[in-house]
Image (cartoon, rainbow, N blue to C red; front, side, top):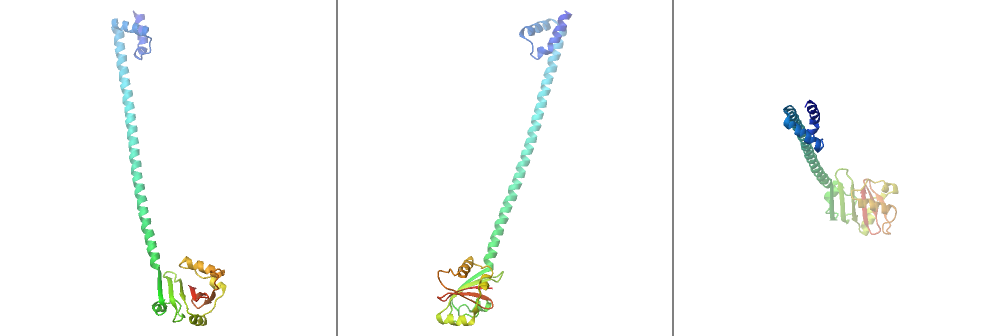
Length: 230
């Protein structure tokens, strides 16, 4: 009947969406068995629905694929950038290591240290002006450290009793300001000595401050002398 066809045709979309109750689904199925028109419409709706589902699945797959491709491309770029950053970091570390080594090498090369048993052994250094020229000939245990870059000299030596007399005659008395305004020592220990001597705290010893044109001396009561270039 036409009424039945119209009713069934209205129900067909919900039937294919499986939204009908079992009773209503049975009525639709019973009707389309005997009605070619409704059966044809049902088949058409089913085909369209299947096509739509496939299209939706295809779209989803494409979206997923594109998303996966985008994520993959992004990951590749991140990995590439990471490799570049790591490579740059490694190069910088190597350059820094080389620079530190070079600086240490240059620092070591700029500072020379010598030790001599006697004044006679030190004549070559005396000629270069790296130790005072006015030392008595019986001076012993001469130590000198010289910085080639800034010409700062620090050192020490020992005087005999007669050498103390000769040395004080060849030098003049230094003022506290002369002793305190010296350039920074090559060896930090010499700065410590200077501060101790300046404050009269050098192990209870009394130091006599002397000077020449190029050096300042701290002469202890035992004949041991520390010196600094001006």
